[in-house]
Length: 84
Image 1 (cartoon, helix red, strand yellow):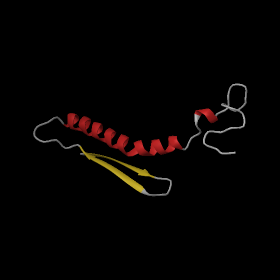
Image 2 (cartoon, one colour):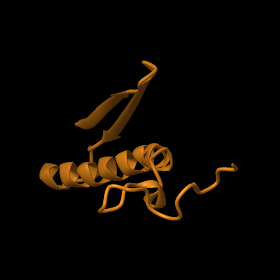
Image 3 (cartoon, one colour):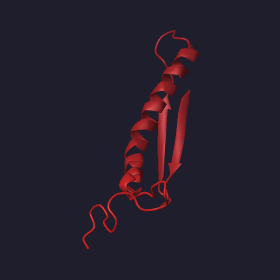
Image 4 (cartoon, one colour):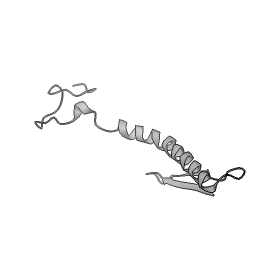
């Protein structure tokens, strides 16, 4: 028995994740499946972790968001990291 998943990125590149759920000895097949699900969860976390970080870095910093009055946060006329 195995669990598999496939991710197709925005560029069309495919990544396949695969975990075997076969145990050794007389282990219960349900326990083998549970172990496989745990392994797959770890693989997915490891795979998507860097992608999530890249996505988070591409978002607007909290200082650059609009404040409650509709104006810009921080000092007027300045932007973090921008030279005028």
